[in-house]
Amino acid sequence: MADITRAQARTIVETALAMGRERGFKPLAIAVYDARGALKAFEAEDGTSLKRGEIAMGKAFAAVALGVPSRTINAMALERPHFVGALGGVVGGPFVPVPGGVLVKASGGSLVGAVGISGDTSDNDEAAAVAGIAAAGLEGVTGA
Image 1 (cartoon, rainbow, N blue to C red):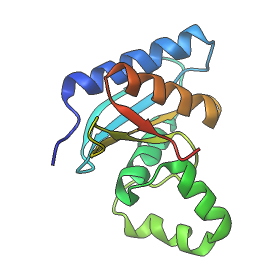
Image 2 (image 1 turned 120 degrees about the vertical axis):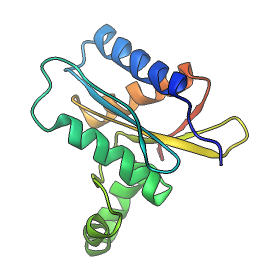
Image 3 (image 1 turned 60 degrees about the vertical axis):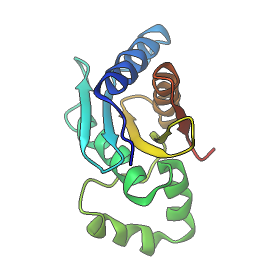
Image 4 (image 1 turned 90 degrees about the vertical axis):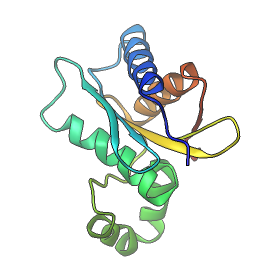
């Protein structure tokens, strides 16, 4: 199984942060996981609130653990709240089922990781993730 590289993870983080600054987003926390669910890169900007990092990690880890973007998990939560509520105890890591957790795929379509961002609106978090992923030469899957 291919995984996201350290260089790609750093590109994602730097590009997402730059986009956030250019667009006037609130301070962001960004977590990049590889396909195994191991944290590959993390950064929280100055001024993020206390638990933004954990929220970013929870968005990304939920996406990679279930193999679907966190936007899709959010839709599942609306349809089957008890099921999604139970998943938090099953996935073995942080679990935040709201938009902002984007799957990362290689050019051949294989899953190589996930990115989670928290700090601004969920839609803005997701947009920053997609920009970072594209800058790394990878495909972001949002579920939108």
